[in-house]
Amino acid sequence: MAKERILVVDDEHDILELIAYNLEKEGYVVESVRTGEHALASARTRVPDAVILDLMLPGLDGVEVCRRLKADPSTRHVPVVMLTAKSEDTDVVSGLEVGADDYVTKPFSPKVLIARLRAVLRRTREAGEETSPDSTVRIHDLEIDVQRHAVRCAGIQLELSATEFAVLEVLARNAGWVFSRAKIIDAVKGSDYPVTERSVDVQILGLRRKLGTHGEMIETVRGVGYRLRAE
Image (cartoon, rainbow, N blue to C red):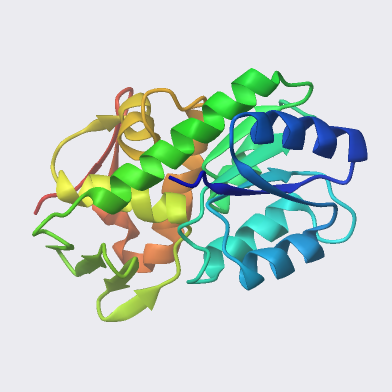
């Protein structure tokens, strides 16, 4: 079986070569580009199975590239692993807010990067293989169409990032149950996902804002986490 095709985006030639060499050694098909503009053009011409995307790029930066990939229906499902030279929470959160699936900080171990890549590819495959009769979740004035990746609230279509959608789906399918930040991360990304709990608060704030007057449906349980009101 043919290995997955990986689009690698970094403006540093040495890093591109390092990543490409290690991926190809593992049997992946690699396309390397050095700008955000070229990354978008490549992804639209031939949709990759995953993207390894540097945060700091000339022109369009990695956050904007990720935002556009996740906004395009043809590439929305493609997992994105972001590379960043910084490890501050703000850099991680900015990527997660626009739908990045994982991140690795520079300098990095090629083995760690490949392990993270395999993990997001596995989660994407497993999500695609899942067939559930409950493809639409309805609660209160919310209607979540999982197959179409669409959310309507009181009849109004909402524009959610991939991560916001996943968090809302988890809370809606388990309305009334309290989820700690750690459990939300596990449910959305898997227990091996290295992300600060602070980023969950960012996703919740974004959801409440987009839900408008219905944002109060997502309740904060002080000292524990969050839940979607069941009644």
